[in-house]
Amino acid sequence: MTRDISPPPLKRRKLVPQDSENKTQSLRVFSWNINGVDAFLPPTTSKITTFFKPTSPATGRVSPPQTKRVTVTNSLRAFLSRHSWPEVLFLQELKIKQGDAKTVASLLTTLNTPLSTSDELSDERTYTLDTVLPRDKYNVRGFQGKLYGVGAILRKDFARNHVARTREVDWDLEGRVNIVELKQGTEQDRPLALINIYAVNGTSSPYRSPATGKVVGTRHDHKIAFHSRLRDECLALEAQGYNVVVAGDLNIARGVLDGHPNLRTYPTQHCLNRADFNTKFFGEEDNERAQAYVTTNNEKKACFDAVDIFRALHGAERRYTYHPRTAHWGSSCDRVDLILVSKRLWDEGRILGTGILDSPQERGPSDHVPLWVELKGPE
Image 1 (tube, rainbow, N blue to C red):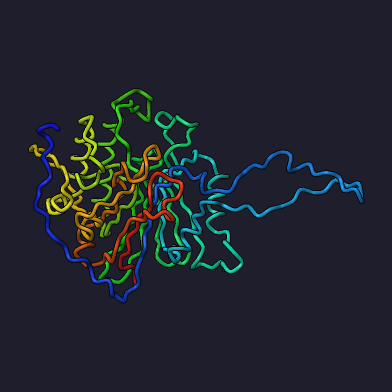
Image 2: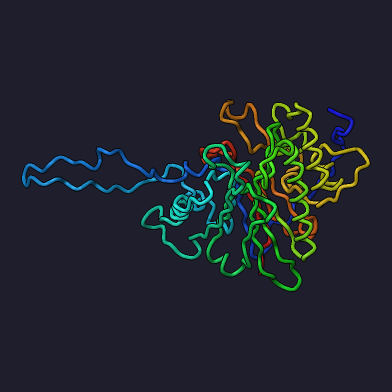
């Protein structure tokens, strides 16, 4: 630990959860780092022997290959069905290469393929898909470019009635950000901007200029810059009149409550990254509530002043979203997937609930688990 990092304050303010009996229409946003889309898609190839069937003794003709209904073990549509067809599902770490339209189409097909004869397709049960895939030729080179990538899955009736546009940002070339801007609701309600995030993981590996390929720092440096750009995007949206919701894998455990059995503090750069994130995105009240590490020097940084709604609603409860597959479940884990909202959205009482879905049924094949928020939606 360095002198730039202060220990988290011990004092926490207890918050009263929002009224859950509100009668207005709600909007549910789910978020999940799926650690690669392939596990959620049907097999694309069959054994070659399936195409050569024995001849029929009666006719001497070659029997045609038998067509079988392909099932997906890890079904995103089944996930959506279990949760009563939410309006929004954000996915991170798709691991789809830029230009791979076939895999994107396959994902969309699986989302809208009925689970059974009773699964009737309608605009209330079918979805659109918008992806942002990496396009940085110097920093996305491993695994043949099958890295990163985010996708916004929107229920069709919701998209038609309430979504103004979905977009990417020009400062993200690694497939880490897409934004869903909603239409203006009533005059009293500010429109919502929903940001799907797969934040940079800080490491000592080199980061290269996307323009020249020259090494210009480390992935730690890139992470710090990513924090600034994301904060500035949030502040710009607020300045345009939006209330902002950020959901996804932020690749940060904010404080001692968010790591088990211990919070990662070595090498020291992880502490600096953590303090930088908490300082740029949260005010004193929220950092106090989260027992978060912040910078203590005199550097002035613009702040989004968001609310980490899991901590706001669940206090010091220890729940985690990242469980590495190399360790026994629950033995080593972190809360690095977060949902942040504009403070004025929280102050307006529009957050109805939030949770982390870490049951055996919901864990799926990823090393991350889903999380969700419900808020008062557009009228």
